[in-house]
Length: 130
Image (cartoon, rainbow, N blue to C red; front, side):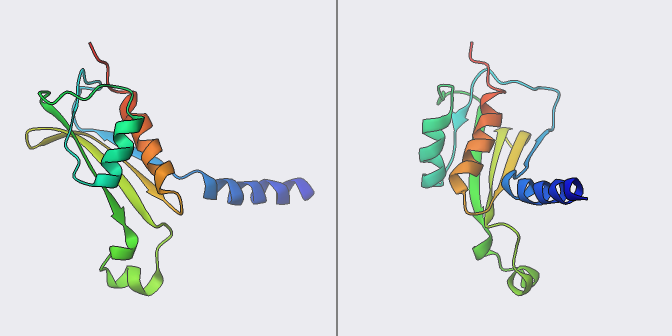
């Protein structure tokens, strides 16, 4: 009985620590040889510049765009009435022209920098500079 209780407690506590990262490729292309940064959010841009493991290229056709969504700014009546389970999420996408090729998103609760780090880690794995 004790091991069953410990098992459920570890799931509950562990589940709160590991926020998922959602990613999707909308093309068969799974790696990119370059990316240019097109991020207007100054906080996200500053952290991206520190954490990316590749050199952004201003003339690259593949654009890395993103933003930070804060749930406190949500205008949904449901969210205002019931609250949310997270403070917001960080969203990054790679586009060529108007076509989205890749997106990655991670929710955050009290740890915005951790969420940014999670999505940047995913992007770092798909950029293969030549």
